[in-house]
Amino acid sequence: MAREVDEQFLALPLRRLADASLQRARDFGVQHADFRLERLRSQDVRLRDGVLEGAHDGEDVGFAVRVIADGTWGFASCVELSTEAAVRTTEEAIRVAQVSAAISSERIEMAPEPVYADVSWVSAYDIDPLSVPVADKVERLGGWSRRLMASDSVAHVSAAVSQVVENKFYTDLAGTTTTQQRVRLHPLLEAYGADDASGRIDSMRTIAPPVGRGWEYLVDGYDWDAELAELPSLLAEKLTAKSVDAGVLDLVIDPSNLWLTIHESIGHATELDRALGYEANYAGTSFATYDKLGSLRYGSEVMQVTGDRTVEHGLSTIGYDDEGVATQSWDIVRDGTLVGYQLDRRMAAMKGLGRSNGCAFADSPGHIPIQRMANVSLAADPAGPSTQELIGRVEDGLYVVGDRSWSIDMQRFNFQFTGQRFFRIENGRLAGQVRDVAYQATTTDFWGSMEAVGGPDTYVLGGAFNCGKAQPGQVAPVSHGAPSALFRGVHVLNTQAEAGR
Image 1: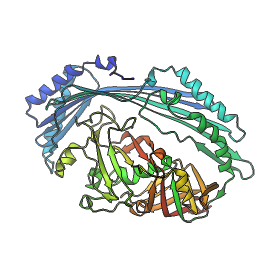
Image 2: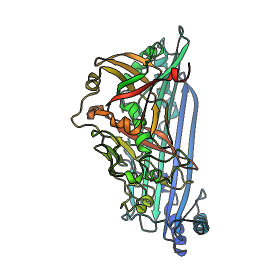
Image 3: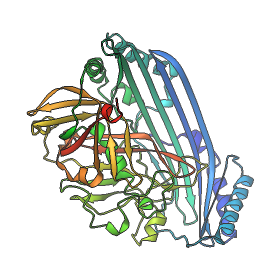
């Protein structure tokens, strides 16, 4: 069903504050000014062994003013929703720019963008999760938890659901005005158990991804019955599984694991601010430097990667970014070659790349927009094989399901990933779980070893609520779609042996 922007948000003095702010910016003759008013509402519900452990509701309301004056950025924010505060905050942003201009080494320019006069956008969802009573959420999560605990292999269960409703109003001196609303949530259940013979303690987590959807996702938007039914037996098998023999193996990687490898080795590496060295403090720069655009062999010819801020239910999906840019989909890797980056308006202008592709985002009214990740996804093969067919091509290897820990260097090049579940593949068939597994590679070797990707039926849009970047740190939600994929000759570690145990 079609949704509309919440009337309580629309009742805030959006235009009155914006008009006061932008008029004051005009008085100073700035080159650019934008005004952004946000309301972020969130709720987290947590259960332990089917009993409510905690519920937290949060709301953040405020506005931000960003200017370019004397060729330099200026920024200020405020929580007081009055015209006086809007004028005062605008003057503060201008003073910041004026002071900074004396030490600025480069003049800020922004890539052009068409004007969008008074447009609205609402994400695709049916039920506002914040409209559902907490008691109903506790009943659903508690019922699922008790179902898991009925199994002899499960000693404890943690369950949680995080929900966010985000409203943004944006307007700038060029005449663009956008009003938007998007909803996202992340449910999670994790079962814990112990093996008495070995004294081993471990857990098994659901692989249902976070989504840009409403409460309907927990009702009939995913096959929760199937996942919950298999979780106890998967945990029991994992607790008694043989430790993996390290070596070079073929891998079939499920999208529930591969999304995170995409995020770290492609998503962050192809943010242009990292590639140019403007982002380094939080988590490094990138090996995929700008001089390699159009020539870097990122992976095999079956590798097709897009950046997409428009895909339905994507966590990074929005109608217009925080610079008033209409969002888009574009190629990042085509036939294994690097052909594009993620851009905001400043980065696009710096390199003469035309329009921004809509990747500016601020995680709160108190933060300035920075270049943030789109939904970066690996395309399926339209005529590609099933996951079972990919497994059937492997004589000696592993099938990897679910994400867990990861490590990657400051150039997004050398990495190591673990997972939730690892199944031995022998002569094209699954042969039970093994444990203590990590796979290790360089980014280009790993993606270069990708022999085949699955068909559309294997494709899943995974992702994370909490991608971090910048200093002061900001957190952004982002999705990554992937099919199942087959990789040849990947280095597999035994994590217990590596730890000296």
